[in-house]
Length: 508
Image (tube, rainbow, N blue to C red; front, side, top):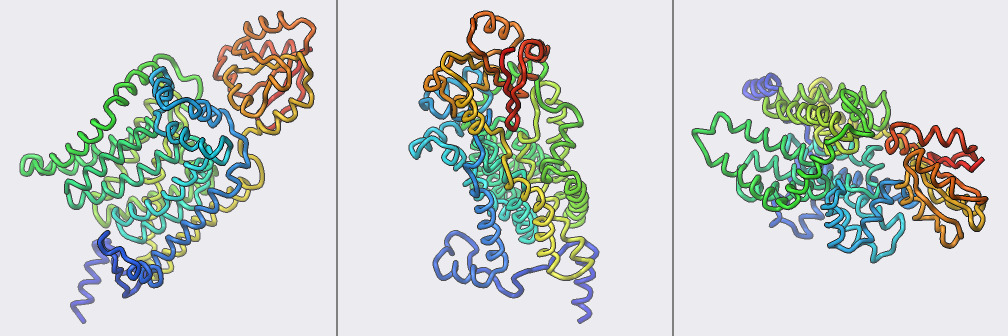
């Protein structure tokens, strides 16, 4: 009896949380892939609270990501995805090599999806599906990082995160990058424990796929490698084997990404040759990223930041290395982003991978509360809290359009334009979402693009007696930072109103 008290005292003093087990005395019969069979799976699903919770969370995550998937019109970036997806496989690579600052993997998959039709649902299907599959992956990542409770709480955060749901319903590569980063983390944490060839190799392969999804994945990949090397500093001279395994993952990554790395360097040099025309600079990128990751709201942000800090403290109490991991990944992510924000466009969605670190830290905070309350209901309480703070934003999100309504706008355009009218898109590249829904050929109008006041003046001088309609979005501020296009519109047109973020003007 005295021995048990002594052991509990040691556990409490060291900060280790060993008592909180939602499964009680039940031990999973599945310890490896070799244990996968119908009997063991049924046993796990019927007896394990973790398995049951994960299944429920994944189902809810699926419903939230596929509900009204095709409701919103494609906005500019999604229409750009369609522009590349309809190209051939070789032409997509040529487009990337020609200056498109996004890797081709996502476009290749979208190209293959077009066999099922070209519509909003089809284009968003892959991001939505990968968004769902990321939920169980973050559970396993949390389990490997700390314990099953951290995993299941992080899974709840992922399932109901408004930020992650939004980008799971967007035909862009952000959800794919997050999927491969979360997948890579599972084997990364395993590799840190076992230092075996298989786990380091799988980490390298999945990291490469993340980089082929989005160039900015390199930030977290490099940060993970640096942390792994940091852990081996003390043993560098004593045991080179550990360094060799890490080096293997680097070699695997470089080999799989070699042509893309060369291309990325060229594109990066071009992208940073001038000041960014849009995005957030300096400390703003840090605060706005936390705000958006927390559900686009200030109050949840402050609450989750407090839990994140508590989680870091808890990680230090359990294992100093785990605390250092959370701090290192956070600092490196935002220091690099802070610096790059002055060189290239930077927006929070590029940092979607940081959800893994952020929510693992938030989930880790449960341990301190568990020691205070000593009730495993704390884990369920954490999951409920994460759902509750997401609910208001989700209610708003599903109640109307969250993207520019190009579908509705195009329908309005067809009603007011007449044969021979001019349709001028400002800036010129917004023809992509407009033309996905609007056809100037069937409408018998003439379409032009304009980026500057001079472009507008030239087109206007040649229109004769035809009526000119000007389709304008806020993107003109980035395309024409001098502002002469907006000045010209104010002087020579009158407003016909707006639909979401799309403005329509007519020649005076």
